[in-house]
Image 1 (tube, helix red, strand yellow):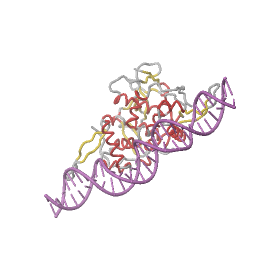
Image 2 (cartoon, rainbow over the protein chains, first blue to last red):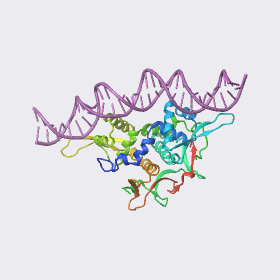
Image 3 (tube, each protein chain N blue to C red):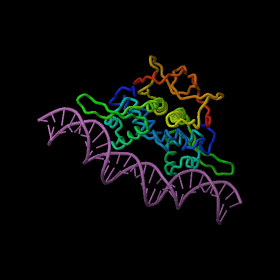
Image 4 (cartoon, rainbow over the protein chains, first blue to last red):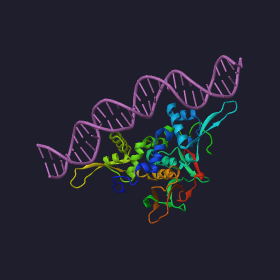
Length: 154
Length: 154
DNA sequence: TGGATAAGTTCGCTTTTTAAATCCAGAGTC
DNA sequence: GACTCTGGATTTAAAAAGCGAACTTATCCA
């Protein structure tokens, strides 16, 4: 049962909505899976390919898009006795997606996990108790979902 | 500059990862745009179509998928003097994606907004100061991103 | 009976995805 | 230098998905 009042259109047209822009960049299965792997430390072309089992053409294109969008940084690494090769690491722009992907992980744990213990969970450093995605006010105090209000144009 | 240590593979294989499962359901441009519109109150087929400007075939298929996945509920509505028609509203499963989409909106505001005032922002009811997506511990206190630790199996 | 309307579906056509093979550049080897 | 190995990326052709327009269906209203 949705408490959201009926609307014929969203209040912000998709063209000027930063959520829609974000969706244009990361709203793609392979792109999201690449970011997931990158957040776990995967950096190299063949490692991404082995992890995702996706066509190399697609991986190549998605990596290029992510570099152009500024989420990944392409630089060289060199193992001793090997030639230099590119590696793809998250920029600060890409790293700042981590809370969103962790939130989505926990959403998946809650709704898709079929009651099993999640294979990965998240805690605060030095603590054993779980953390969760939520909203906080300026002072860092939690705001319950039913307390959230949208405000248009600044 | 990424502080994430190099890994050849992610610690949880995509097949058993709830994040990967979540991406399979919502990791699609049109699907995400449908959920965005639904969170703003759009419910009807033609309203979604006008909002998204997507082919009706695509919309039809995505709505069916979202209903099957349990994120949307299909029921009938009836305006007085009109025949009954289906409407699509968010289930509690779909509603619980709201923090993630608001978080993504704020990520877009920060990185894609080109310094402009965001067209929409979020506040706590009865307050004017902004709220933001974050992590909290069991007591509802904020946990900074660098304090987050991943724990495997358990 | 005819028209208006909302919610899809059908139908050709175009674009993207996929999987496999191929290309390419440079380090190590002879 | 020539030869080979290898990680990274491109080419190619078939399969899948996306696209826009027209069409169908069902019901309310005149």
